[in-house]
Image (cartoon, rainbow, N blue to C red):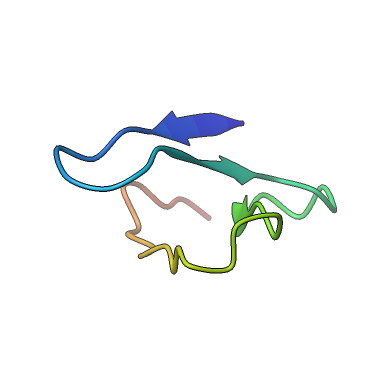
Length: 43
């Protein structure tokens, strides 16, 4: 789980809810639409 605290707007959480390695947004706050970046990949 990652807590995102933007300089403007409410804080929100990204979680890997299904164990696939991708972070999903916390659906309790539908106003937030997260952006996904690939930081590092390997095969």
